[in-house]
Length: 318
Image (cartoon, rainbow, N blue to C red; front, side):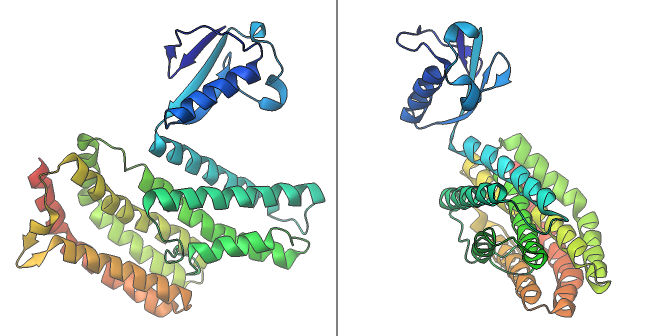
């Protein structure tokens, strides 16, 4: 049997390993010893399943392939998996009035996995989950996960399931934003330039989308408004996160020196973040009028003022 790691044939031959599970275990240990992560494994093109493949002899397979990644690769891959899992839970619960005992246990295990993933993400990205509020109900991510965990063992009636799904939707909004942010952290300079160019070109459309968000809130379509707002704010978060990577790719770029008419880029960035935080607070307090005014008027105005700084940065990295 041939063993490949990231499409490279492994030179060393098998010694004591006689079963696929033993090979998987040894490769996993080796990967961990190198400070990397095992992102996937296939046996003759089929995803490795420990329940059915562990005891298979190595002579039963022709090719075993391992995908190994760095820390950020692992995080991005896991967040995509988390996003799909949240969707699966939501679709499973929709229209139900209770769960079986087996489903409840599986959900409890899943919620613990969610907590572990978010804990790892917060440590790697230096996030404070007790302070981050997705653009849904305004609850913090920490509070949302706490409610999801508490309710996961009590989904024995329609009311509890509906409440659980509300919190799950807020969690989905955060995961969507987190996936978008992490995808920026390992990009090369040409791609970062493309992100900046695309954002500059789409500012007009982004401002229009904020008007649609306010219209949805005013029409009582809160769920639609939350999703639209999350998508729009994610574009801003992706841009702001890209500046972290841009600084790594261009060490000579000093954001503190970027000023227009005596106003600094970092000051403008702070103002933009303050408006986003104020919107989250207004939504938490269910003050739709205040939140809507900020979304439709303050945020577009802040983007207009932010645009010249983006164009100046584009000139500096051209």
